[in-house]
Length: 215
Image (tube, rainbow, N blue to C red; front, top):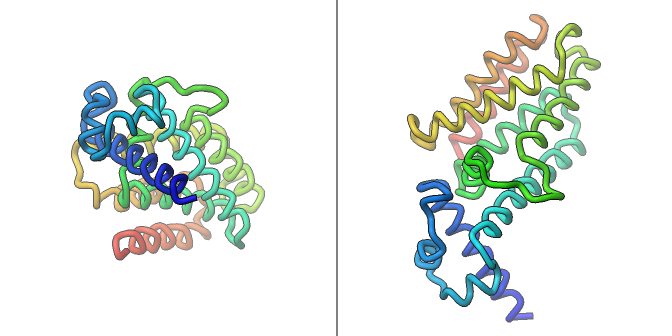
């Protein structure tokens, strides 16, 4: 049992080190030797868990997918409206991106042409599907205008969210990501939400931003 625990800890250390380097330098510019040095493990330890750099990238994207699905399922079990749940998912991704490198690296890998191996879905397709389902439900709940196309709105939301993160990676300090997410939602709310319900969701965006920055 102790040996298994050490192996799991070593694997997690390697993944975190690889994610940090992929996030800071990119996938192509990071070598396995760089990861070994950054993780402070032996080459043998790395190759015990991962045969190639692509396997590390896939492991990071698997964690990203699992984290998103777990977050969505957890929010489904709570008494939130569909639109609030969707907002909380985006702020949850933002919070985890600020706190550690794995989701940031997953985003960079997804935008950097790294192949997504089946049965894993491309993260953007997965995010878009979740957003579409939430927006369809939000239309039924009258939190979104009935003439809104949920698929088109979901595509715009995911594209804007990913784009803000990519641009922010270059132009903004990491701590500004929650503000960018809140700014995005204030714009989306104006186009999606009927006037009588806007104040609730604008206030929610501000509150979720404060919760992350205060943590």
